[in-house]
Image (cartoon, rainbow, N blue to C red; front, side):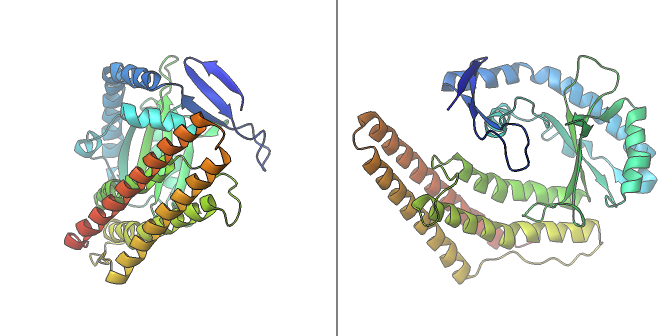
Length: 336
């Protein structure tokens, strides 16, 4: 492991080159909790400045939406103001996960288009309108930072979620190169579905990423291999039973103008299966740490750390298990 101190952080070099021959990949780690706290405090200190940029960006979106209203473009400023700036905690978490201090969605918002599949409109009317008001697409690896994640255009998420994601910077400013992320959705029902799915599913299953178990190149048949498989099975249940239905129902309303909605529910058999997955995940996690302790039996410090990591991981899995049960109960009361 190569460690280089950079502003109280360090990079851990992962693989020299991936199969596509791209540049080395890195993980960014916060060396101490106090450093992480300092990073988040600095973010909070800049919040007022970020908010000024967000307000100007929102003013622009209101103007552009008004100009393009006849094409089905609308901007809900009240919705945008709910979470205009990425939180300090989410920002530091993203830095640690992505390996980059460039946070592309620091300022972010949403606009609605009745037909986001119309790429000619995006390139020939919407983007020129944004440029006329002072914003151009940022560059990512030398290319315009726009990503179509739509069915038939690009790659939708496994959850069934679709959008167009683009990042803007101010055209004339040399100092303010903060990226402003804009998400294009089908409409307000889809935005509401995204909010519910994020709270009840995405933010929940994403916590599996916080486990201390190293799943990288796990040998087939190993405890970590099996644990990772159970995590994937749990995620699949959440996505197929909840996420996809939420997004399909919302797309039907906003894009296809269909009011009928598929109910979200779990049969007793579904609940038992998910419970079994969590139980097996906990067993494989304990087996993983038992094996690791056997390997590290000559190092007391390693044993202490492994016991702590196991306790943390089992506590986290129990929490996700409990929250998943709470999510199921939520949809039993709100099936649509």
